[in-house]
Image (tube, rainbow, N blue to C red; front, top):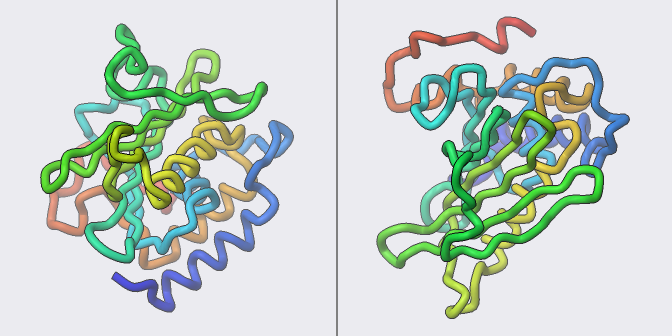
Length: 226
């Protein structure tokens, strides 16, 4: 799907609002309560690709009640969209509290800064079967910010490892999870950028809304509360 005028306008608005926020410090974190759309705004600030759609996530078995989560779809020049999920939780991704994902066959990389450190993991795919995934997370006291993405094929290390597109996706996820303004509280810039998304045609009320899935029982209209 090509970038249309509506998407270009939305991205321009978000870029304008967030221009001074990327690479922000702890001072940028205000009293604003984070929302799925503010998480989406943060993802847009760190990943330079045309947005197709974004939606909050409800009732996913891999999430706990109280988790704050959003999923975004980005256009690619070829193949399926890239999907990026950003979650604020009280546990490591996909319930990995009692296991070390870095002890498996995939290599972990340290990312971030001394102030906010994180971990990045590329899980290689299988041609014609599975594109592989990119996973990043950052532990913040009693909370965790993590991001999960798939789309571009992740080649195994013995075949050259992640290519330029996959590396750019990994860099974006690393930047998202180590951004001090991504968490339970956010910056004014991400809050305003999220409100702009509410008024765009790219924001869906819930993940799956586009394919006719019924409204979740725990549905919360985040945009109506702004």
